[in-house]
Length: 594
Ligand code: SAH
Image (cartoon, rainbow, N blue to C red; front, side, top):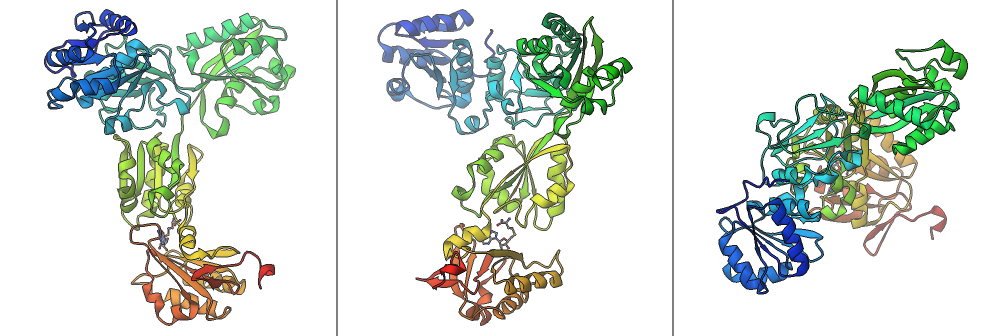
């Protein structure tokens, strides 16, 4: 491996390596072997002194010393981060290469390079890089991507961390919904200027000549090999046919997610062993299912024998197309004496996460919601919610903000981005499915994207805990917004809740232009429950300017409704609800009522 760290060296290209223990010296030799022209080793026992002279004379320092010892030794000579050489510390056990000083001035990249040489982990703690350092060795691992060859990881990681242009490539438009990369890395980086490539491809070799820059090839789990065989066909024959079929189609065996066959072959030794030897799971499909698959090379002989005109092609297509994925044959059926094989490829699907952030306070958002924000490369939402979470987004995340009232556009945008292959998070307050974006989004979404939902604490639940225990028995949620629902429908539901004696949670209760609906709804409820029925309302629940009050139905109708606006949720008790020590309580069951 050759050093790629051109950008990080300040004055001189020399790397001063401090190694005062036996192990350190051995490791220093390994660095020396990789960078013979640059490494200057300091091996005398006076570690502090040696460190200071390396710091004074070299463009960078690697110390096989504890971070604490290094910091103490260098503290008196520390100057300016722009002119000081970067310092990386490696522990005695050679497990971590820690970028201690000058992270943004070559230290982070040097830590990655040193870690690459020594086979340890780089530790980067500068805020933006640590947050954005999608570690390249596990990039896309949750989608099943694997790294074809680990050697380019270190130089490509160094290019990524030092802000040099990096290009992300897919096979054509088969985009995988990967997490964000820092802004210097994207599909838009031109080939010519890229100093490293991240390529997601199931093709065995790139069509063009080997690239001149470090290239990390990720193998996506995109292929399914379909196989049929005569009874007793040997694993060697099946295996050789499969390998040849992949090779002739120019496909990588590392991208095979499964071997598929027909149920009649579920115990066929040759097929099972060929799959096991290659580390592929076996997918067995009923002949009746395969019979319905449209294939280019059907055979009546096969139909008479196993009940489907195609095994290899149909099984490959069928297994690749599971869960509604779209699949296409990329290698037609090939035959050996006793076996057949074909390969199908599935189209990756974009990913839409519907994320509720909870009522406001960050510790009331689910850790999973925050993880989805990290996972997404595109985040779509209302400006005010985006502002709440901007600090959590990784650099390189694309943010699509929109204003109030643009729900449909927001939903369509999120779905379109996922359909284009991205990992999208559509965010909202409370729960994403409660009077929020999940339902319009899913109205537009087809089977061509994956959807995950993260539950959030909805306003009524957050408010309930400020008020007491108002939701202890049956309750109904009603939105008083008549923008999209005719008032007649809302009124019918309020009446039903009144007659059914539900505790009622009113969302969107009152605005300057919609001021009569709440009093009207309260009057309907008052026809069925006593005037002292507890009513609680919370404005901005779990936010900085939270305000909560417990009052009565009579007081609300007597003018207290004025305190309610669109940032408020209103809870009206059932006839069983009570106020206990100032708290709004709805007893758990009518049988308990004293
Ligand atoms: N998806 C949201 C609801 C959106 S509808 C949720 O699950 O909470 C908007 C209405 O929700 C507001 O008019 C208000 O009635 C209520 N609301 C949302 N957040 C609130 C909060 N923090 N405090 C009080 N009411 C809130």
